[in-house]
Image 1 (cartoon, helix red, strand yellow):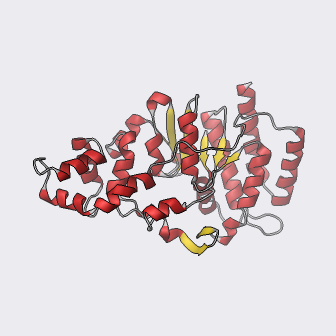
Image 2 (image 1 turned 90 degrees about the horizontal axis):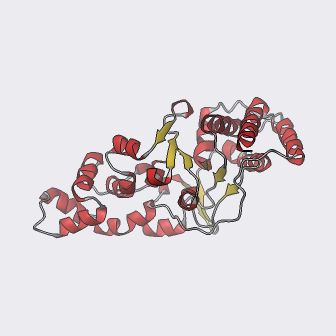
Image 3 (image 1 turned 180 degrees about the horizontal axis):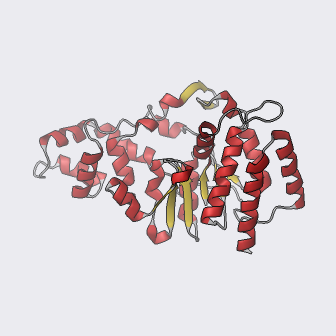
Length: 307
């Protein structure tokens, strides 16, 4: 199970009241919400391995160089070290706590310089020899769904009580395209949440129609360049007008699948006495209560099932 960690802790932060605080007044709503999510996911899907994939760069410069509007609406400021994301202060304070709790639970946090968690997920999913469940609220990761390799997405877009398990057929039913067409679909229609403009005048229905007729973005571009192809003058003009965007957008949307990642042990295993003591102290300091208890119990059951 690969967690799109930021996607989950943002959802937890907005879903759990910020009145949930530690004894010193520090908000811990995102920490407790994430732990509850992990407990539910492990109990419901029974993974043998678990990785918290991390955004070491939430807005990589190489993607911005290709499309300057990429996630631009989320930028709080630009520094010498890179872009600073707009994150509420009460959430920022909880991120180090999240990392420490994950570490003591034995869940590796894996990131890669100049890359997003999506790219870490793409790399791990592509290399895995066992079935993969990707947990995310990001539709871009639908491109990784692959029945032939037992790769699914557990989509949190409708909330944790209405999880959607997406396979090849479910992606096709939901969007009208196969997972391996999803990048081209997203490029054509655009995505305001990521600052992708799309092709002006091309929405979901037109994108699906074009991909159904021609199969891929490359074939669509070829068709618009061929005056003998049966394609409307209006669509031809719209696609041709977006030539520069279409030349770079697929590289921005497509997740990287060949990163060099740090060594890590993803196996869910029994928590050692040292880590158990550390978790008890974290629970005391941050008042993580039943949320941490549920996560520990779920992971202990998964470790027992694995052995």
